[in-house]
Picture (tube, rainbow, N blue to C red):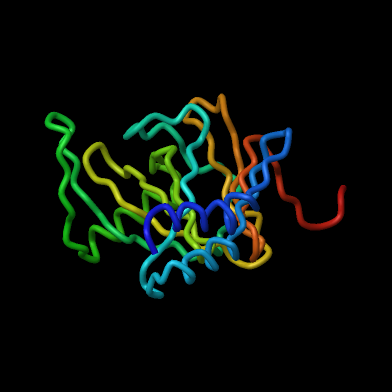
Length: 187
């Protein structure tokens, strides 16, 4: 299959099924992306992605944080850890050690990690994002939300923008507006 055929197939199977409402809610059809993945002949370990750029995001800038209302039971994995030299702009992967991973996870779960506004969503409905846990230590994280969760709240560091990302098992959704989940009876 040549590139033009892949583009036409993507437009037919995937792009035509992406829904964007007037409020800015975006619905990404994960099953359609999986179907496209299979039809272009990618192996199970190869991934297809939707790219999602948060409003106001800039290349290589980490100015978002996880909000307070996040899926506590999400499966979070460090896929890559890297050192970033702020003076030269160069980066290099770091060996995964237990101490490094513990440090990254601690800062991530404490809310100290800064998030880049360029996100990826794969054909399995997982969220991929890059975080900086220190001035020179970053990581690429892969997050699989738990079933029936309301995903993650992601905010600009200055709280001028609050959004929500979640996956319902079929569709990955992004709302550029604050949505709060609540379980239980109203008081």
